[in-house]
Length: 301
Image (tube, rainbow, N blue to C red; front, side):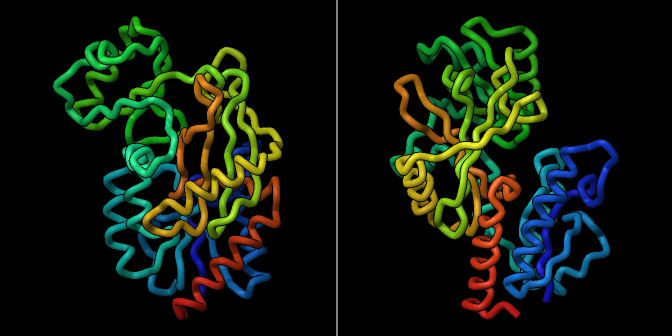
């Protein structure tokens, strides 16, 4: 039985001159080689391929299904149908919890630090200006509750740009938002991603925004740098994963520092996280062995 490594249509094969896709292919090649060393055969395919017989696979692993939030209704319907035919890792229930940033509220209730955040429901009866008036923060970040890649993420002060107010009014009719206090440390310290496989920290990288921006994603010119995590940061990442009600086999904790210099969780990526195997290939071996052990313990053919 093969393992399906799930991606999206545009990432199936090389695109001339596109380093972004090349990195995705490299990451999956590293994992496939690690799976092979663990005695497991794998195959890359797009999650939305219509002619797939999912029952032929022992497992399906989310890797780079990065279009899910653009095709959310289609993706969620596909997951509901396909989970009857194949075992997913991470678990579908965990994926559904993680695809809505409301999970940050749960993490906070479990005693884990997040940036100061207001959770704005869909079709709120308050305007964005009213939400801002309810707090004394001076700078804000607004982002959709379901999304990624910096989609509709805006930074502003107490005077809201007319364009942002208009976009919020339009989109909030259909989706919830998070309004967070902007943490200025992002501008000089960036964001650190801590990778965790089978409950154990493996490696970290640091992402920095380009000058003049606050978004660390490479879509907006952000850059990736080596990072040596401290013992405290390593312990923090493992603590986050141990707090989960459903065990995550793999994932990533994105950390920023608040106005008091304390680490807090910017994002917890459990659906289709970029894991930077290329920065530390042994981490792929850790994940492959964990997958093999899971299959053996649960007698997955």
